[in-house]
Length: 245
Image (cartoon, rainbow, N blue to C red; front, side):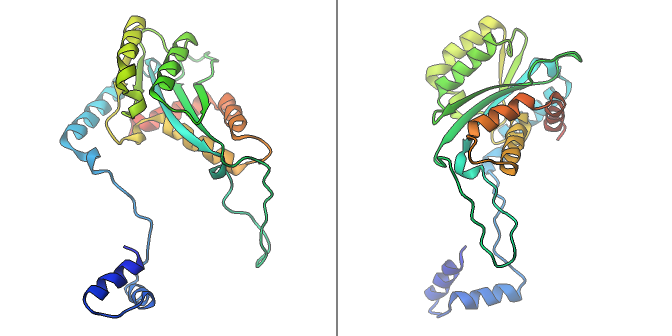
């Protein structure tokens, strides 16, 4: 609750207090307003817990080289900037921007574990789009990954239950394509991003961009540049981390 909401509750009891009074009480109690950690209760249904347990058993013994993870994330220019800057005390910091901060991009990636020690292929297959993230974008991404050789017979494609991955119009042709190629679709337990190494890739990308952001360089270019040099060893460690919780 916000301070004004506490004041409103006291008013219902015919008690005339203000926000400073409430704030002093909290201070005396050593309480403070915090950003809460939100927990999605639907993650902890018996059905989902069982699916989570079965997934952890499966991923612990599966051949990583035949498992491919995919996911999407949004990159908004105005959020890809440093939040702090050094300057003398009591002096304002002014940053000159020369970029359209309203630009936003949807990034789809597919990551794979090292296939063999001499494998020199890029560990991340990616598509970036401007303000579009539909079920057919996902379908086309899977098709492109197949033609590019990032998905092949015997692979298991793992993803979450986002609506773009389960769209009714797209699901039947997607199943037909995957069955024809020999690809198995596998959906993660609900509300479990910690199981997908793609989330760690997105976090790494955003931290790197914010740490060395140049406003004259568009976000899409920085994302593409980083994806081209992300080391296979890092992807391997992300796989290990997400399978050994």
